[in-house]
Image 1 (spheres, rainbow over the protein chains, first blue to last red):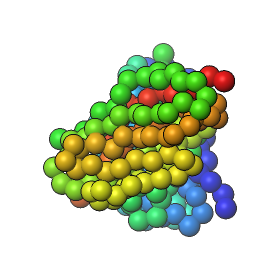
Image 2 (image 1 turned 90 degrees about the vertical axis):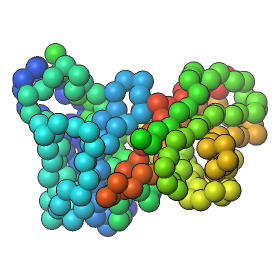
Image 3 (image 1 turned 30 degrees about the vertical axis):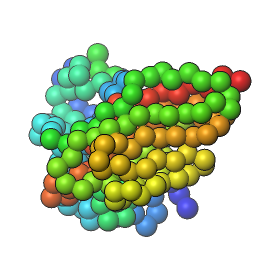
Length: 114
Length: 113
């Protein structure tokens, strides 16, 4: 059974640039959630995709967008990067929605915005 | 809105000590409650969960009981090991048209041999 994998693991961008983060979900999982974790804080829900449709969004501006592909892998795109976007971005896959609690996380992509 | 509050860390204990990490929550409905753990250099893993009042979740010697009257879900372990050193997150499920997890800030646990 393949776990959740994310890429890249680390990246550095400058303010105003755009970034794409990628996630391969665990085999058999049809739901992907993205979270932002700032240093020393708990994760914050960005959005969730279920069968290629966004079906939930947290308190993040529209410059945070995503996609889910037919194989249930996913992308997180962030446009017009700001310094406060520096964080660990976590992808989690699950079956049927993140509220079941059975989330399987990748190790994250650490984004630094200079 | 719904929220989760955890005791601040780091918590430093000696091996074989008793552990309690406090977690309290605010919720309007009947959430499920979770503890996740993040070992150094690894992703988040579900440690245990409880889906209704008075349920006790347990795993790897850790336990937590869903206390609706005190809105708490404290994590306990009778005898900690160095390998338990990690960051522990308390979370609740929140249905707002979809399910999402609301997280505490995390508590870093350091176990000294």
